Image (cartoon, rainbow, N blue to C red; front, top):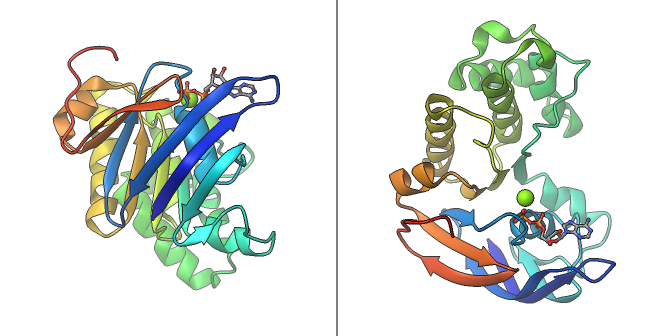
Length: 228
Ligand SMILES: Nc1ncnc2c1ncn2[C@@H]1O[C@H](COP(=O)(O)OP(=O)(O)O)[C@@H](O)[C@H]1O
Ligand SMILES: [Mg+2]
């Protein structure tokens, strides 16, 4: 599903954010990526999304070598990925319903199918009664759940989440993790960047630890005992 082969990412200006990374994530896995602030976690996700291209090495996603993917091919690959950004990135002038529907309109889903799917997603994240609300009228936890519903709308093969529980209290964080676990149980490969040790330790999934862009630990059923 995800294959990093000797990947190095140096930002213009000289910051080496990823340093000779080798990493394989198989279809159906659930993986946490942890590490101190600045260790390269978000850069890793951006390389998967091809928001960034590596300085050296090769990133292969669902069998596609991203260095040779043509501009026409990229949307086809991205369409199979769902992303939850730390800052939600919801459209402020659109309702909850429209925010989730938007991802499906982009791929030209028939209107009737959109309605069924959006209702199903909003019930799943517990926001069926908020479909007419605007993002500003929601709490942080609710906005995060809308972002997750939107990321799941097109039934992605790969779901990426950058600190999805970053701004949430314990109950909301656990709720989000349950939803991610459910998506994973239905076949979606899930990669979650997090700082939340309690979340990681309660889930017992694969945990990858980055330090200064270097993969220093890869545990099959990880447990974190201290702050990196
Ligand atoms: N756009 C950028 N330009 C230059 N340096 C960057 C940029 N984005 C991130 N970095 C640097 O790359 C390193 C890794 O950043 P990042 O991937 O955001 O880490 P994390 O998500 O783990 O906090 C840091 O040293 C950061 O300062
Ligand atoms: Mg980050």
